[in-house]
Image 1 (cartoon, rainbow over the protein chains, first blue to last red):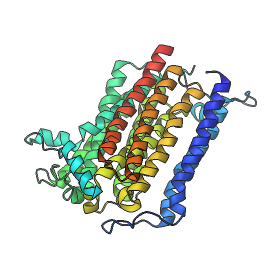
Image 2 (image 1 turned 180 degrees about the horizontal axis):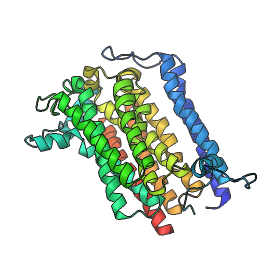
Image 3 (image 1 turned 90 degrees about the vertical axis):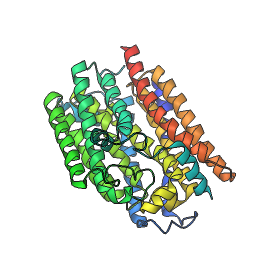
Image 4 (image 1 turned 30 degrees about the horizontal axis):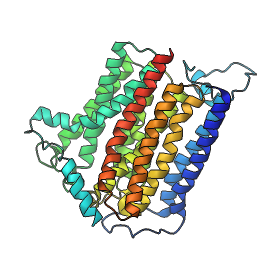
Length: 99
Length: 312
């Protein structure tokens, strides 16, 4: 896939993810506008709910950073890597057999 | 009012588990493994194997059997841990423990035995990483989702969704012996697919979950907020399915398929949301999202395989 198209896909994805992430987090940090929770079920602490929502957001951010480096790999410099799988992930190289 | 109509709609479409045929021991043991749920897990396990490389049929069989045993073991232990609430939910009260056909201790022993057999099978005939990832999925489902989150937070489906996202890693690791960026994407695709999929069902089964004291999103956040959250997670899911094409893991055939499949899912979620806002009956639309999301995930993984096979 040509690089300009990859960039368009990447930045469109970043924009969508950012908007959606705000949508996910907003009701957790602002006063609830919906009906009161059902009396039958336990209600978690607000802080815990926010934490559980933030963890995937952090993971998503890291993934987008690694993806950017996969789309725009830097020329290899320095000593050869010792842990291929981990280095591949951190350096953002494409998957094996990638076209 | 909507809850009642949701119940009626869902009841018409879903027969309580185990109601179809007279129970036998073998049928009960199979039921403990939740075979219908596992079938989709196996698609998301086996398809990545053909994306990652060219696995032999022996390895595919090992991963198929090992994956079934591990997921089946997790489901059996889940039925043991949830035996108290299964008894009060219409959907689950015919399961072997609440109906008194199997002893709880026998069920948990069965589940642990299946997981142990799966670990040995995968470690011996595939590789240790594959077995470790499958076992991690087992532990995550049993302890993090079932034991910890399910009854304490409406985020149970979000975080617990990670348990169902391990199968692609298992399949990938069986072929390559490692986990890399494309495999992480497959994990996250299943992870972000889970909330809109499961919350569609939760919207229809609110009364059941309320009776069981499980804090599913619609009971805590309300229906409208749950539908909004389904939309936000779908809006993350779609770009996540497209990005692997951007860094070269897949080609245009997959990209076009993922985009089309994702837009249909988005349309379904928006329809549920729009109907609720117009105070119209949204239960059929929610049921459609639940069923289509199953098809969506299967077709998405098939598209990955086809794309890679065509591109080779």
